[in-house]
Image (cartoon, rainbow, N blue to C red; front, side, top):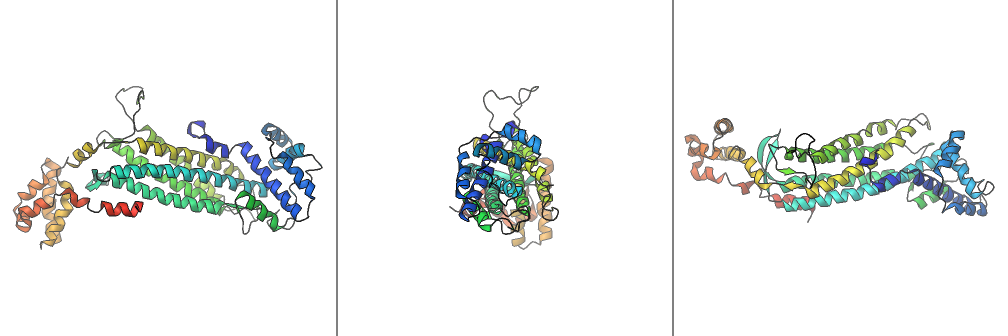
Length: 434
């Protein structure tokens, strides 16, 4: 996580100040629950709330941790400095450090998910706007990078919308999966703390009690969360790569917005490079880089070890901050993207009429020609278009066998572009449910 690719709202989720504030709320709510059960005096629970407006001193906590070599104990010591040693003596009653650490981490991941869901809404809005804007803008579809059949630019945006809409549903599920807390004690048996404490704390923090924990919340939940972030990152790259291809000089069907005063190259003043989408491709790699470590965190020794801890201190902020930045950048790229319809038609006509080869093939088979013979008839004319850049329709009209099977009117009718866009409205209705 570096400032260049970070937005303040997401960075704040992972700040030490936020972390210690969540730790405090966990401990204070736990004290309330303990007092309600008669385990600790009510006045001691009330005293903990004297620190509710305190800005915890991160440097002081670090100073204490330098001696204790334990972050939670350092925080509890600092809390007692504000509340009073006698008043704070029941704080953390029956709890273990992971009760605080794991519950806090999940609160942070839930907050991060909420920001990312809002980011996805921005991307979806931009994709929908551009899809309707270019619903009928013809461009050639490509398979293996080679001209295939006509499609529309609107369908390109629409398929990306559908993909990101699936990602939103995945993230909503991942948010639900990660929104659990555990206040269950040393090995998760509640031996020294009542399950009612966990229920109270989770309710206050917007979490559900973990059905069964050990000393930690099961890490398959976290693996699923980070895997979802990796899928979203891959979808970002999918869109970015398409835009990069469209911006190639030989294609130039679309391009990133190039602002006044922007420079593309230190050496070549003419350059307009797809730097934002190239950047998004790289950022997607960084997010996906966190998925395997999250998977490997699932297997811990017995009821707990801390091999996952150092990993999560890194991948939690790194993945969410990077993905937050990438989604916002992507929304901006799509919203401002330049589209060149004339170039799309020019590209489609580089090999005039060739994109209609399948329609002619099907017409020949329907006219009684065997598929093998029909394929040979179409291909011999198509190859001339490849080699000589002649017009495919004219070649077919000059082929006696094809004319005998279809007639001149039958051939000409097969070159109507509207044939390929007749179901665009149906696809849009499925995608956008309008």
